[in-house]
Length: 263
Image 1 (cartoon, rainbow, N blue to C red):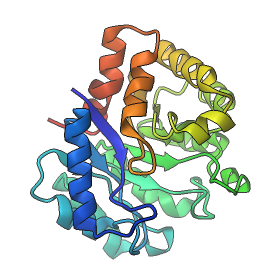
Image 2 (spheres, rainbow, N blue to C red):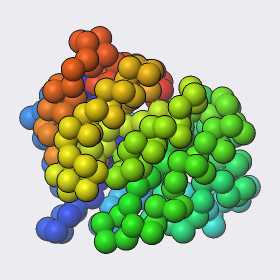
Image 3 (cartoon, rainbow, N blue to C red):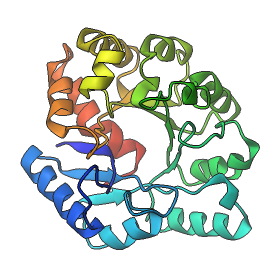
């Protein structure tokens, strides 16, 4: 079994409808033998990447697609928090994502804390976008793991997934998160040629993943960042690691199934 814990319904250069992209996703899943995918919406309404409401409409009848919730920090109020809680209660969303770096907002901003408490209450993870953006290295100051560990300390029951492993500073991210059993990592983007090159090469990527798995096998989840990144390359990355079959099974599906409370 394989669960892709990090995909989007979005297009790159060629504009498509979200219905077409959903069909592309399902086809890609069949081609790569992906059993389930977890769709992450954009936190703004736009024509390039589907937002929360659009994703809900697109996947409501698809038993192999799940989704994450998100909202812009300026939209956090009592009404929207009640709506998010309802989505958690109904298991329509299986976690929540914030985008520090895309947004100039730190994860330590107190306005996020009611959302963190909902994640804890309903036992769903918080996903945090990390790393540089192409052409903008300075944005990583907002998603530096030094901020994330503050949240992990304050909320030890909050399960936090660091997306993209704070590339290109993987060694730093590995080191600073040591000892936090409520911090997890997905592999999204780590097989992308540009990420590999800027992060120090494929040997470095593999080494960090192996060290992370050996430190705590439950802490790594398979994710791809499709359609930005190639699914097959990410599958090959995990399969190329010098780890046990059981550890690969944990990465490919067991850890995601547990964290997102899937069937």
